[in-house]
Image 1 (tube, rainbow, N blue to C red):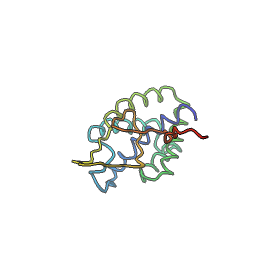
Image 2 (cartoon, rainbow, N blue to C red):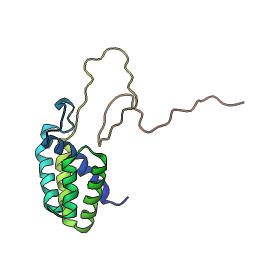
Image 3 (cartoon, rainbow, N blue to C red):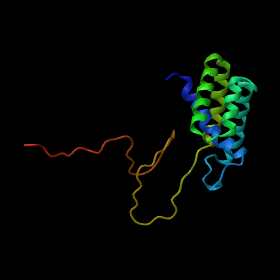
Image 4 (cartoon, rainbow, N blue to C red):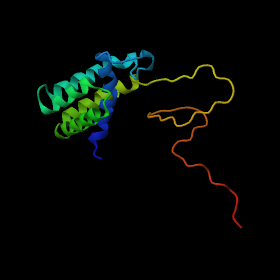
Length: 152
C-alpha cells in the first residue's frame, strides 16, 4: 500500500457520515457517527476535496457518486482510490489534506457508554478503530494464552 491510500481512506471515513447528514440520510441521530464538534472541520475537508478534484472532471464525478450514496462501500473504495491518485500528483493537496484531517479527527471522536451496569458483563467481537483506546481487561490482537502444563 502506498502512503497516500491511508490518508485518502481517513478522509472518506470522516466524509461519509458528513455527506449522509447533508443528504438527510441519517435515520437515527443517536447513532450518528459524526459528533457535532466535527461538522465544521469535516465541512472544510469536503470543500477542499470539491475544489481539488474539480466539478465535471472524472475525479469530481467520483466524489459526486460518494455524495449520492455515502454509505455505499464500493463508492467509498472508488473515492479512496481517486483521492489517493490526486494526492500522488499534488504535494500541496497532500499537505492541505493532512492539516484538515489533523483538525477534524480529534473532533470526530465518539464516546460509547453502556449505562449503569451492575454485575459481570462480557462483550465480544467489538471492533474499534482508534488512535487512543482505554478500558480494563482488554485483549488486542492476541491469541489465547497457552497452557503452562508440560507434556510428558
